Image 1 (tube, rainbow, N blue to C red):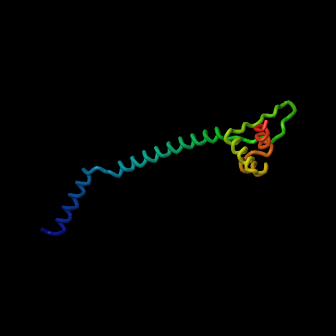
Image 2 (cartoon, helix red, strand yellow):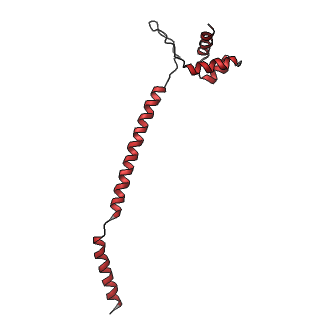
Image 3 (spheres, rainbow, N blue to C red):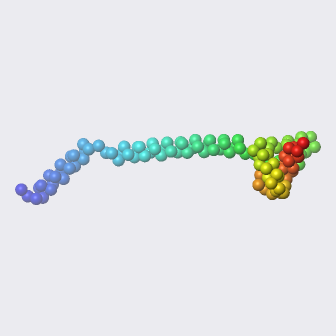
Length: 118
């Protein structure tokens, strides 16, 4: 037999076998697509949750002077911050230093210290 005939027969045989073998690349491609979609959904859900948490924790300071008919709303200072302010005051820190460390205004620090002494 001729060598070229053997190679040609082998080529035809391999082509015939390739039609019966399943294409796994499409399956892998579909799995990767599903995985990327799932990751996208989870990332979006986490971003939404983070946004809600950030909105809940957002405390905006009130710096603008109230208008004539508006009442002044005193910001609520959390107990942990109050305790921190009082401890810093006991340790001898100045009002400005306490204000810087507690992220409160000097007036808020004064009201916390004044409210605890009364």
